[in-house]
Amino acid sequence: MLETNPPIPLEDRCLEGYPVDTPLTFGPIAVSEAEIIEFARRYDPQTMHTDPAAAAAGPFKGLMASGWHTVGLLMRLFVENVLSPTAGLPSPGVKELKWTRPVRPGDRLWLRTTITEARPSRSNPDRGIVTTHLEGLNQNGEVVAEFTAANLVRRRGA
Image 1 (tube, one colour):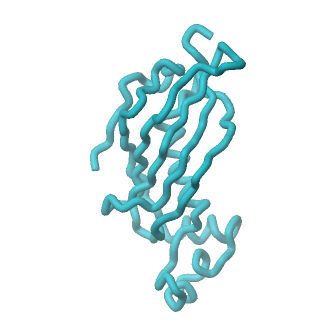
Image 2 (spheres, rainbow, N blue to C red; image 1 turned 120 degrees about the vertical axis):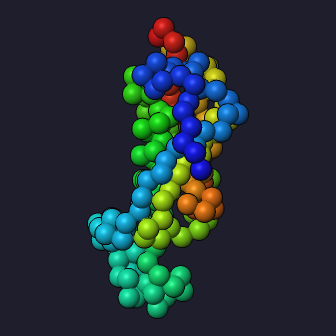
């Protein structure tokens, strides 16, 4: 997979700079066993995430990252490559979050984004809503997680 760059740099991107229906791919980000265990011990202490021996004997046949850890890694790629640090506003949320394949130690994750809508807000003319379909892919191109995010973004000149 090749890294792609959006047509407008992050610092110059406002609502009008989010191209609809243009898939972009970013990454990779590496997943280590130590990070999987550290995250899970703090936030999702299930043995499939914290204990390599118990995980190997379990139904998934090995240690796997918490889905929340996976989403956190993908969110990092999203923030670093898609969301404008100057025009970004809070997000009203995500929907249809799915974990479709285990993420294992040594995996390298990529983020593929497709803006499905970028429209002005009906109630606040200084901003708009960008809706993005996000897919996390492993080094084999297999989807490991996917979800749809909505983000509030300032409009140009606002």
